[in-house]
Length: 454
Image (tube, rainbow, N blue to C red; front, side, top):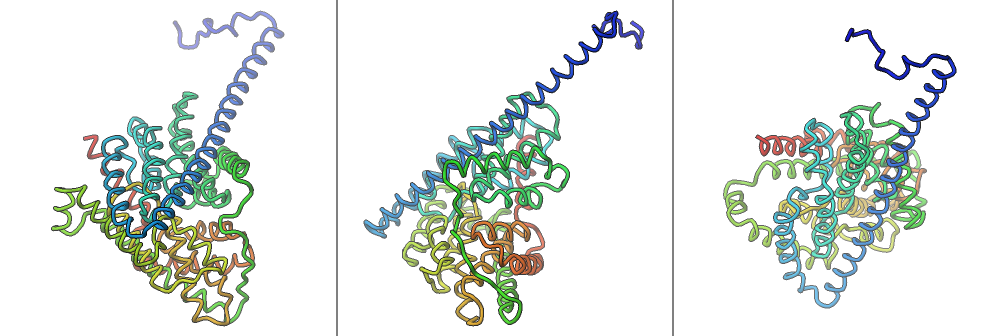
């Protein structure tokens, strides 16, 4: 057949203009119908992300309540509960949910740069997402210093990736776009911060603004956020604060919090990156030969820190941070120091769990401690600055840090101060730790996957 012979097409045999017009109209209608069907499936996926995030949040609350009851009966029971819990999590994760370890954000970032979708299917499988939910919940019961926001990112990405496969999407850009949107939607639904979810997608998950800011991404985040609000109400994570930081002497807090938050967050990131590359030789050998014993010892240390802090270092730190922000709880400097150490130990154990909520708790504790030395600045304002500074010091994402703190406290009056402290903390953190935490962990994860494949 001649390459320019189109006699096999139905359009060629149509004799009248009206037949051709009807054919064109039907074809356009069919194409539009398929597009709307795909959009509808995208929206269903976004609603599922919101529902899963709400259920995950409910499980987290149940886990925290159960742990609280154990501590209330006898705080020393955690010397058994935490080590046994961490060993059980490690064993179950390795046997049933291998790949669910860690935060979830580095894994999601890695999938955006992997071109082999058989690998992505394994990382973002429904089984791994389920394991992330169950093991993180068990970790919260056990008293590990973890949050559910990082896992929610991977879970949201897994849900939207599954829906993209359901509708038969084969385009690499489209499938990566669905993963990006799902991850951002998971984070937005976890905190009930839709704007932060959009900024998180732009600043942290990807490097392509056009892809990140697409209408599909925004729609998925909005649908997921609306679903979360429908089930949990239009709540604010830490309630509403009226703190203000007027231009003048009060801005001393910006400089102090920015430097301390940047140094502390940068050191934390540097430690995590170093630990991800391997422990010092004797410890590394012990962890490889007797992994469950090593994890059990990590659990024992976490329990001892919890007992020393009257239970303040267990879990996400939400109750402690909420109390500090709203002024009805006051902690000494030992709180955020012990919470800081407990987060590092939890990371060493390798169990599933995120770092966002515990980082906000550490930042709130740091800000509360700093505020007593700054009598001319609103204590609540200094606490918000401490949260933004430390969070940014860890994640090195200044705009995300600003928007998250602004949204979770429902306070736009301190936006300029939050931006300033976040960018200062970012600059200081980059000096202390030149490698961004999540991007570095994602590259290491990507390298590990490539080695496993080869």
